[in-house]
Length: 403
Image 1 (spheres, rainbow, N blue to C red):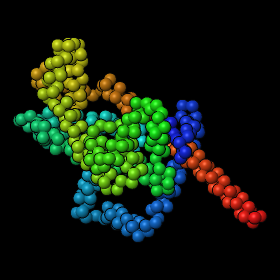
Image 2 (spheres, rainbow, N blue to C red):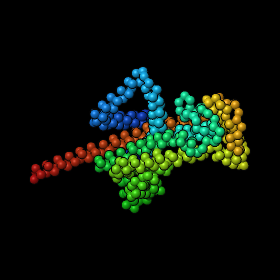
Image 3 (cartoon, rainbow, N blue to C red):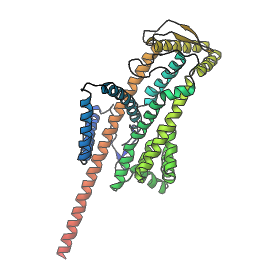
Image 4 (tube, rainbow, N blue to C red):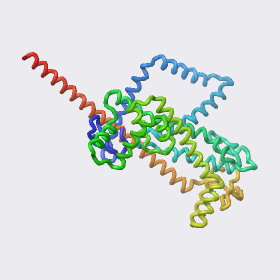
């Protein structure tokens, strides 16, 4: 698959016609539906190859579902387990969405995980502790107001599992490029982009900065293996799709690729991003930022303080507690007012989320449609090659017979 905004190449390295949703909305919708139909058919065909595993999974799922309708003391434990599993699967799913777009992934850390960590951090400082739930009916309700400030370690422990699940999801989302490239290599097609760049470099052609960077990534990952994959996964890297494609092209073992990707994204990268957000929204950092803004622009400082106060009020409205006001020296006086109306900032944020969701869906449809066109063109070329081969064989046979 190709990322939006880039050219797509067939097996021979020739450019395939680019279709976009803006210029060909019906064509993109039609081609993407055909692509999804083929992927669904291939997935079902793969699953039915393992009937025993499928039967066991169906039986266990049926038993677990049936037990929910049998009264007993196990019901409460089942509901608790369902809520816990569902909550963490939600973050894994968001992690998958973040990286599965092949260049057009949904930025779920910025849209969902980051704001969640920020809310937990602010609520922890409001409650002077972490004695509150982060999901469910009583979410962000201060069970008790502590006497000391919430520590960095306590807040990290409160959000670390969601962060690790999101990171694990991003690692899973990187698997499609790996398997696509590995399957293409096994079929003798290889990585078209890598082959094109290598031929161009060998011929002494002029390479753009992007092409030189891509070729360097290919070579580095091939040379350093596990360590190179780990480093690429541990840092924010929009070109990590190329790592999966490269590893698949050079047939890097699955557990080498996935292990390094999982460790880098789930443990290192997500933890680092979480620590940055927790630090950025801590009481001390907010006081430093407000103090800095007071020297730069009192108007900006007043606006930032107003936004923080309204957000603190919104957090604590459901908790039925007072909220602390943010001043230049941090969190100070506690008042009993609350904000019931949706803030302008919240409206803008929700609009941004809606726009990015729409862009993600359109980009994904364009990627599916482009992949379908590449597959159709490659299939047509293979059929022509087979016909040509049969014609040559027939001509050689006739010549031998005549001779």
